[in-house]
Image 1 (cartoon, one colour):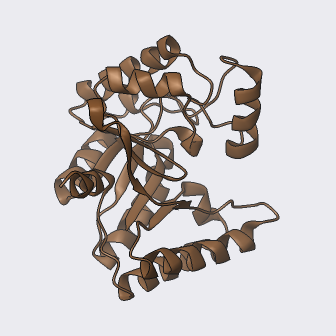
Image 2: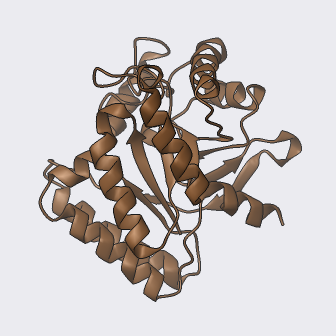
Length: 244
């Protein structure tokens, strides 16, 4: 089971800390999906103290994963891909329609910020779990080891470039008409994947904490999977296991 905390940035420091405290209470590591660029009025480069928090989490056993540059889709790319990104990710699908050059520039900027702050990552989860084929090529050229989408974890290294492990990402959609249905799907989906001895993926977002009951629903789903035999790990460790 991989529990990932999305949208990790200075603007969501309080929410990330709350989810990390819950993970610590459960005794599990998490994959922290970091936004290094400008987002919600703040940027990681301007908050070196928060980079210290992330370094401490990595030393604690968590994994840092790049989560785009600014988490905001622009006007680049084909209209069809942009429209899909808006529908699926509510305008956050930053890498869904980029060509290789456009994606490469954002990756270069993101890696430079992380390197300047002493942060390292080998993995990438695109905002909205959507990346164009050209963006995936840019990831491989930039030296990233893996990426993820809605359906699993993909190895990007040379001839191994193939889906390493299948596992659907379970997450909430807070504030919408399907909020309660989504919570039920998370609980049932985690239990089903655990029974099948498959990969359980639970994605936590900062805005989940602003809706009554979603935090409790999420923790019950994680606890249920652990009691049923799921072993909590990180995306990088999943890839190691698949390779061996």
